[in-house]
Length: 401
Ligand SMILES: Cc1ncc(COP(=O)(O)O)c(C=O)c1O
Image 1: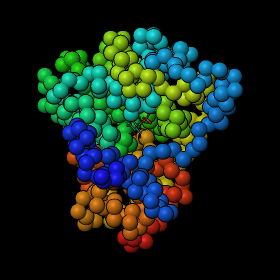
Image 2: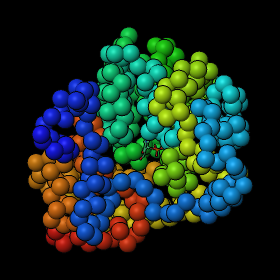
Image 3: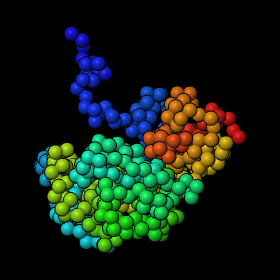
Image 4: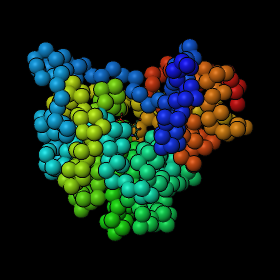
């Protein structure tokens, strides 16, 4: 009998076509390869360099000592106290009153939230419109739910703007939803209020949902006044699912915590799917969320200031190697998505070569949709030392201009 080793050929009989047809996100693939390269300088994964703020940790420590239920399941849609805090936050953020029981769902982060939501809304063959480039995992999430990703190219020549006129050509009777992420990963683009409202009009006219994936709205730098949350449009309430993640703004990526604001009839369905996926978001992480939303969140100003100066740094360093990369200065989030100007086969091979020969880890642009090819994504949420080390190595590898 053959030993049961991962990857042996017997195992492949057990794998569904659905799973086999997926590919690992290019971000995670590079992060995993990078972990095997001693001393690699990684700009591949968007994990803020900061530890979770102390006031959140202290809140959790206290609950660990005092709450004898801390190790137990919570109800599927989340702890009542956290749902109430979320409803209050949503009112402050958007001006819209939501009912904690009818509209708030506590998730294990936006990845899990979006996946559950797509499972709820997607029938086989339904079309989900994705900006191109978009967050890599959205493509695979649509695929595994039996949907069809429909790519809506961003206009790179117009600093990655939405081309709303082109959107009407993509809408069909199979269009179920569009996913919007602003400030955007991987381009750092903040979509204009005018364009977002036009998408809203189309969603109402053609009866599709707008799924707003929001990990980055706290990072808008000098463009604060231009950021617009479409979830603040009351007329669109029944068309919108708004997903907020604690991973980035609260440096809580490992806690796995987020929330969703959704129409009541969607929540009824979502609870079933969420229960099947995970029963509930871990109670200890929800406790961290309660601490996060009851504290004064002074860290947000510090984080944004730090990311802002790291953005200046990475742009300066990119300017110094303008023969290698051409880029558009990001407006928000903490990514830059430069075009590769030197000869290369494709962005994945380019990234593998850089990792293996220069010990620099970047995410290949092809992971983010067809328009991402010939680009790389650099995350500047890492320390200034890491950014500098990566660029020193890039300069040494390619040579200065
Ligand atoms: C656009 C976008 N959505 C979702 C996620 C994942 O968020 P979470 O940690 O809340 O699952 C990320 C993380 O990089 C992201 O950039």
